[in-house]
Length: 263
Image 1: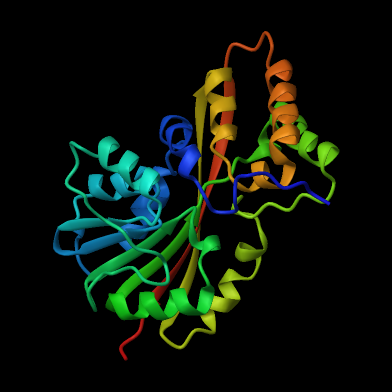
Image 2: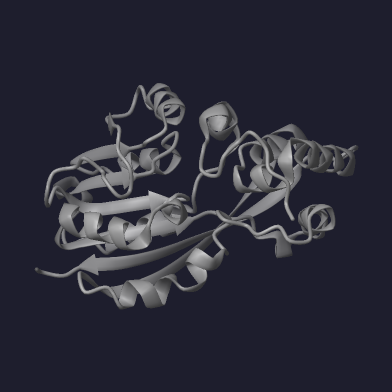
């Protein structure tokens, strides 16, 4: 069985710095597609990003020109880092969770969860989003996993996880159990309809240090491997990248969108 470590599932308190510094943004094409779903131009709409972390996706929303953008994040360290990272961006930050956002009724035309919906209780979260999203508005859950099949190097690195812990199960990779059933679960929810799947790729060139830093920001792998196993994995990655000038990493942004129906 996977070993446990002092880090808990979903706790990013000690990972906020690496998350802020090394996590990549989402595919711009997916942002364009999401804003294209809205009933009005972004300048006439209000957006909320729940489970915003350090605000990577939130700042992308702000760049789209929404009338207002609110970031909701439960973890104090992640929220504080996000506030610092977004100091020059008009984003309102507040404490809250997916099940209890603290947002007013019918206050958002777009409510998103970027790389965070897997931590939320589905039924309670969707009931909360139905309360917050205006009729005709949209809920979007999205993830940004690496497209490891695009690179033999990255495929080999990913395979090392299975060699260290054959029973490891990804929670937040965007290809987990949450996403495998998400279309069906959203389609069956009485408060939402017109479920749409969106996908976009983008490739970034990372230094080996940046690539390793992105792994250090990952919670689910670290918890399951334990600190010793995770250190062993990072040592393997570092050795594997010895002599490599840059890592070409393709990210696959995957998004599920559902429209709020009139009550």
